Figure 1 (cartoon, rainbow, N blue to C red):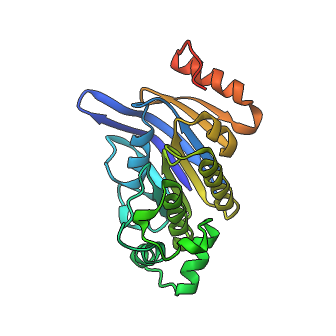
Figure 2: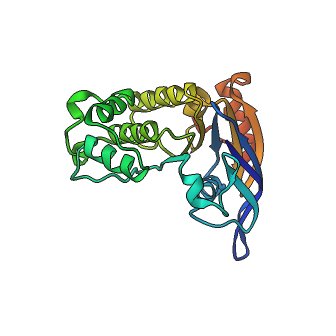
Figure 3: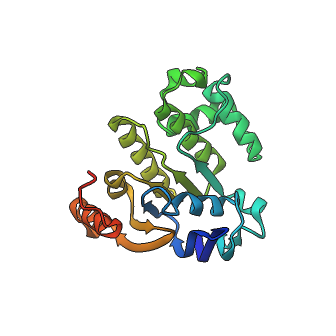
Length: 238
């Protein structure tokens, strides 16, 4: 569902992403780890069509993102670190609005079912988003992905600022989407959450994908050591 071929992005003399070759299949959760400036967000932005590649290609569901950006967006859902929802609208109203943009006309009952599937408590359905915690807003984001029937989910630091309970709930929601065949690419600093939810983990540095690991084949301690070795850190980060 997600393929990049020698995907490269340069800003003047600076290379933000350097010949990235990546593949994420249906029902797979791929986590990109790396420090700030490693190329994680650049990768997400290229897949979203927010920026054009300097060279190479990105594909969503076999469609070239640069050539068919509007068509690829039909298959995508995106949850950034700070999800932008309309604060003066309720959860139901936000979901109704964003579903409409995706050309999905849903009844009030269907809207509430998607919110419930995303883990939002029924008593919050008709409350304004301005009263929501970050974890609750992320659940609305998952509901939007479910309602849109997205095939690809792109996440940029979605668990940053979440408490452990909310982060764990978010991980459970990702597994629910995985069971539906959604291909997920998540950029994160959170080694623990990456180990918990990912099927594969990539470690990036200076725009390069330096190492790729299968999550079930390594321990958290091994992942930490691989990360430290790649970053040339001397002190533990956990």
